[in-house]
Image (cartoon, rainbow, N blue to C red; front, side):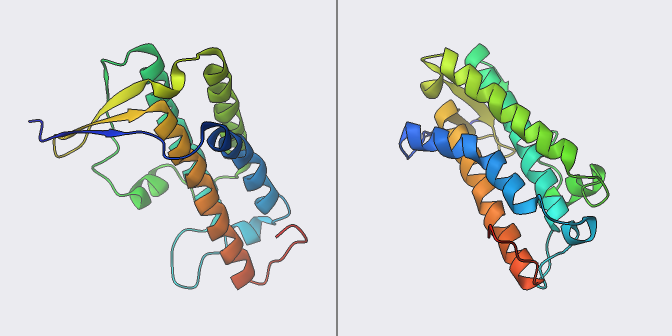
Length: 179
């Protein structure tokens, strides 16, 4: 049952959002490139994911939302479903997808490739920013999210977690000239 249709559009300037989106993988690599395997496993003293787990989470989130972008560009009438993902908390997915055990290189490469691919798509579709995907929430509510909103959300997501990684590094005394 549809409770309500809500629309989500970007709030910021397109050029600034695209610049931040493009810069995300570069900045994530900057903040982790000098870390040892042991340092990637540092967690906050208050609990939460390790740096390694955060990197995997960022890449997987981008990968998932890329499907929403491609759906919006290919078939706006289809519903982008997250019903396979929604029943479990993100910590369960982290366990299922072995975030704590895997090296981060493949996830960083995936993030770079996903971002480059989406940026290329956006550069070749002048109407892309306004196109939207329909998402059916677990409660039945339908939400329309524009491509611009998804890009803005994912751009912000990376920088939110980069700040978290920098906090974990400081807490563990792992500094770098770039922090």
